[in-house]
Image (cartoon, rainbow, N blue to C red):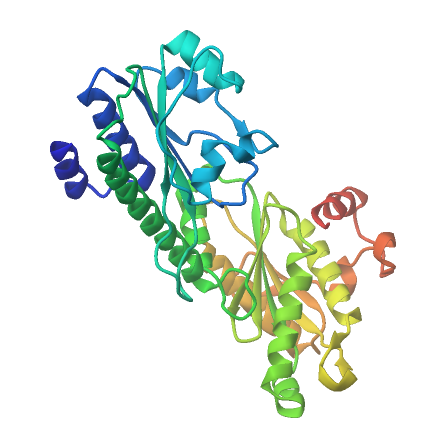
Length: 376
């Protein structure tokens, strides 16, 4: 155990990897400890399965699934998950629960200890997770006099997993826009790195830059709370209209970005115009019964093979400002030369019968069908 602690302190391993090392060290320290496994997560779960397991009976543990029902909710796993202290107990081929009978018959296990991985201190920034550590031995009375030691191990495991959950939550927050709940500019940087890493193997992808028209007027006339409500509503509208696998982010201020993988510029232009029409038709409900409509201008750019997302964003941004210059509430599609754009929103609009939107016909039936699939 001490050598394992030293190794863990020297290596920044993932939390579950650290727990697995400790479980392996426990089961290797004695021949009587046949299995050690842990589960960690939401305490209201209806199913517990070993997430990390070690010992000679690990194959048996991989098939273990504890579903919450009348019997198991009164059993040691879910009681320990609720924070109860469970004393070591014996199992045999006559036990009431099937997996215990199999463990006794097939693995020679006769005593079990189930311990809670306790919560940390409460507070506004705390991450509330619960878990269990379960140990199986093949010697009657094996845990007598050792419960305190294993409780200390459970406390250590709980601390490791809570800290990992907190770090993951902080990492998610760092990539999330606090106002709208969608991805932020830092998240876009991560996506850019992922696309760039794919290199020439990357599938076609298109970026759409969206800027709300005359948004300053909303803040000036209705106040910043109203402006925030419009930004949140816009984020929800965009996120609710795109495919699973597409990404919508707030780039900053009143500007949004939609990244459409596996999409050509022509397909993305049709989707962008449908989003433009939905936004134009939407009424944002404000306080005191006030509602308002906003419009947006769109710039679309397909990524060239090997092109970095940043370069495509610059082209999309130039197309966006061309749409602004031409009167707003329309889209422009960037061509192959940085800073230039082509085609108006009316040229690439399409008909969405499901949402009651009728615009000019699409130039290509196949493209329209593809784009229809791209919208929810």
